[in-house]
Length: 263
Length: 261
Image (cartoon, rainbow over all chains, first blue to last red; front, side, top):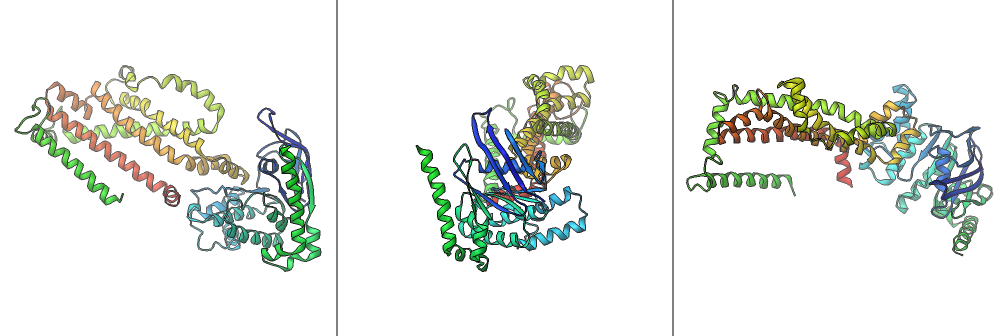
């Protein structure tokens, strides 16, 4: 059991002058994939950083499983927007650090790392340094580094934001495949509405600062009813009327938010 | 610029400098040999220093004495300075405790420690190592500390998220992350080691290149003065090159990063 729960969470920075989150209540069920979308600076990344244990709420509580989050840990693997791979470590060394920290025996570790390398399709690049890889390959390594921990919870902070459009699509399709094979509780932060609808079971929409939850859209029931799983390519899914409808709905909701804030 | 072309230009520059030296000090005598030695005088002095010796020892002995002290002083500075810099870079408490001491010590020119060093340890090696230490450990500390600060926050967060224990975090994240700056500190420490050593030997020593320089000045022997200076230049450059080699060997990933950036 590894749900994530935000209980009346508020977060201010700099002695309370900047209020990033205001009274957020949000529950992500075990093995659920939830995406948060919202305008820049709405505090969606702050939500993720709270769940990761990099920051702590000013008031309220963040629970993972049934325990309050007190520090970062490998039970909540984070995939960062800027990859955050160690440039002085090779692909294998980056992936295996978390396993070494668990004192996993060398042989078992080797097998797990090789499986992960296989999974992300980086065979032949085991000894490469991050800067010898493209952005997409680097992010795959970062995802493998997270998956190899077999974490209860995956926290992904705009993981495809730094990639070019084609690479992003490939990575999104791969993530869907991974998520089907090995479902996890996922908190996914993005400003891409289509990405959110394509990947997530539910999409949470946040307001401009101070960030509040505006609306939660259920994608899963529609995806299952309309049989999106039959299509393996993202563009086919994106052509479906049900997809377009959901996307437009979320867009409108966000848009109201943007113009509303101007007045 | 390609490496071959660069070194060709470098060799040419040095060649022109020697040529200018010949012309300025030669028969037409722009500069009197009493003020600056001719190449022939210098060559003769060099042969004398290597053969019969000068100042109770041959040139080889002087050079080895200076090299030994530079190496010892440098190593002590680095062994103390880098861990201290790591401590100050990673712990706010350590920084708060140590920084005032630094602020107090830093304005004291290293050479101002010489009288105290001689009083404590006499004219032997220990006094010189102490003076070198006071000059050379400062850049190691400061650059290491600054290097730790350059490590990007997501890398530190990634290490924590992966459950990295403290010792491994220092060894595998902080040290490599700070390594480019640490090497900058080491280069400056090495430079400071040479500068201070020669100065310390000038003031009081029984052997070494600074001692040789001091004697040559007292003997009004310009050729020998230049021999001493040339030796300092050559061995200073050699040790710096050696350190550069170690740096390139150690930091392969920095070169990779530079090539792709």
